Length: 113
Length: 114
Image 1: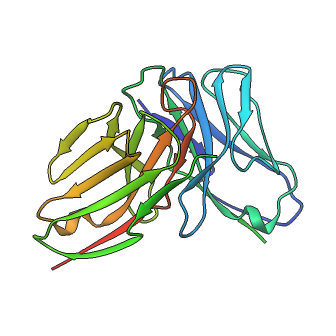
Image 2: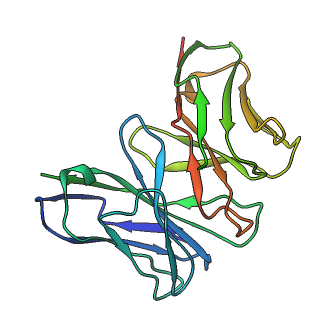
């Protein structure tokens, strides 16, 4: 049981490039979320999904797109990378049971030059 | 807009001592979560607190929730070096009724010294 799997673990991009961060979960969770973590700050919600085909914006959605075509996968797309998007990105998933936490992937460390 | 504040931001404590981390939030919620993060690692769930007066304990850590005061505490008893990490509280106010849209505090970096 892998839990939440994120790829790649590390990535360096040039300003203006685009890329997709992959996230997959094998726990049949309804809910999935993307967060970014910057030094000295807590995690901030980028986008989230309450089920296949349903997504919504979080606190810091600008510059990012998401889609949820299957329950398992929730990719995050950077449309035109900017240095301000240098961060660690975490994907998380959770079930419909209120007594369960969100489970986090290992993160993707992204640097934009 | 929901605000979640933790204090202190940094805590250096000696082994064997007790201390409390505080988490205040600005909007009514009955779902609060505590996580631990080691440097360069992911977040590990510690506690799920779902109602006013909820108290959970695991080893040297005990968490409580006062929804009326919008306050959660994480109490550390007789700290040991292995507890050195950053601790985050997070609140969910979404209408899903579960942990789906968390707002995090800025974290408390705990350093336990000999």
